[in-house]
Length: 277
Picture 1 (cartoon, rainbow, N blue to C red):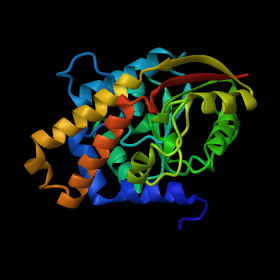
Picture 2: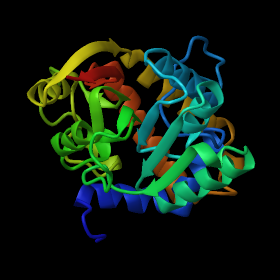
Picture 3: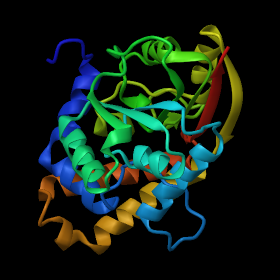
Picture 4: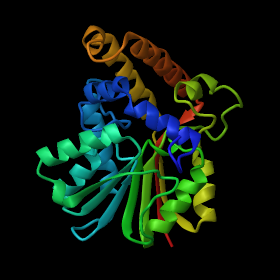
């Protein structure tokens, strides 16, 4: 195991470094990023919906050219590049997958944005970053991959400046989710638990964060995984040219578990926005 990585974080790192995962997410999401999208029409592409999530997050923040942002669990760096193009600030991308970081560097260089983006191989449970240096920490659908989510919040509190903002999305279990019903969902992504809105609000309060807003949008999680499943079914033969059949067929089973659990009210997704006092 990589030193300093919990078992769950190391499992996520191994998964996202695999050729199957890298090829699948790059093809299906359009190559810019791999987070859950916001859909306003059924015919939205995954790429457009994912971009809409970025736009929504950024619209809720106070940013200018002098802002310093940490994108925690940055994937392929699409959010960082959007921030550079629209705000002109500096963004540090912290991400556990060396394979994703390599693609991020390539895309960032191709778009001429390397001067404003630093890409760091790192672990959000133990960030090798100086304290109180960021105006904003943002994260999209990454904190679920932690084996110690309280530690992630503690690290965010450490690196944020006083008055800094922490905003993130995360697939979560619902606050009243019955025990045991999410086992098929958890097994697919090698987890033993998920956070919830109430759980994150409790941690934030304990660490001295002020809650700015919570925007619950669980229907978008269902929409998103339904779109991904449809994409697989529509372009199955094409995707098989880049990914193994075992991986794709297992992905289809897993997506159906997510969709079913979401429709039954066992899952939650949305934007949580805090301010460090």
